[in-house]
Image 1 (cartoon, rainbow, N blue to C red):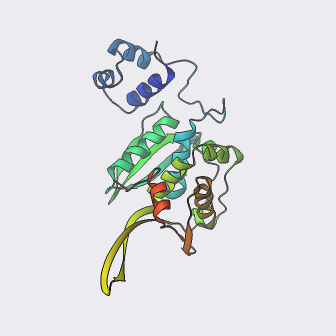
Image 2 (cartoon, rainbow, N blue to C red):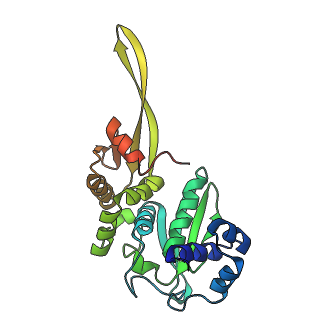
Image 3 (cartoon, rainbow, N blue to C red):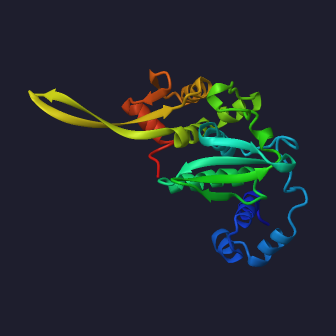
Length: 249
């Protein structure tokens, strides 16, 4: 018998187009079993099922991560027949971030493929589903910074359970880890000192407040040098945030 985690990973890999042989080697599941899972999916898990509309059991860690990515660089677009596309724009300089975005989407909606559409300088990670608005009620007309962004109670509960992954999504989309420097006099000599810091930039005051709230949840101090820029600069605070985010790659 294989646990649900193995079945979910196999379903994600199959939906993503990975070969039976590759999945078998990686997960230690026979090709015949994988073929049976592919050809006879669990009837309890239909491709169109929505966790919010059925049992409300979203994978908290993956959802918190994807929510952060969506609030930063994501959008929903209405298509024909009540289908929506979820699009996360990812800078091509950071292939790991592209893989993570695709993985988070696949974990939430494992029964459909995740697409990667190349544009100039960035890759759009795409997924099509009628139920994306159920999972992202913040969807609306116009840019996020010109409308109210407020989490539903169930979303807040999931972020409280996984604040680090929510922050990872936010900082991986609209944040950065940079190296600053300063000149100090030491024994009459000018010496250059370098130190890392995090910055998060967003024009939405509501999304900025959510970032501040999540940092407070994990007791990481922050400050606001400008109304649309948040800074985490203390050495111990940067080290703490490194556990959840780290440099982009």
